[in-house]
Length: 183
Image (spheres, rainbow, N blue to C red):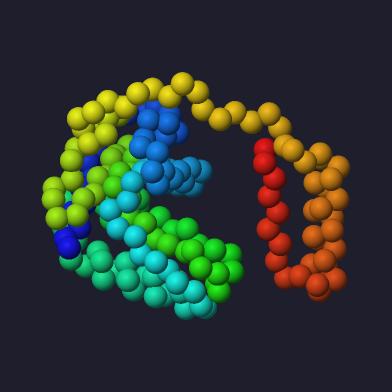
């Protein structure tokens, strides 16, 4: 199996999340808010991470082996271009379900530079342009997208949960807490 990855500049200034709705529904992801923003879809390879305290090291070694034989054309260069894997890791290292995915399509932006990376196995990656999959078929425009109208948890209940978590850490009952709410 030979992985082929191609990154080319994309003359596009619209917000990356505007592309998200037009991507194939399978394996979509968005990483927006860092020094490099990425949206993408599809999977050309999956690396099961497994369980255990050393799962990250094993997954990294497996990814390096996969990418060692890859043919890479990167006309942009820098962080977020070329070969890329997206990780989905369980909080509990003993829980099953963690995986690294090499996406088939990534649209990225760093500063004012935008690019598109396509990947394929044993074939040249097909060029992509906004509104098209594989550079050929135009996707239908979505009718609508999800909208959120506030949290389902009242603010006073949220603040009570935060206070309880802080007290549990201060009291030595917990070392770390991850709180989240839907708004």
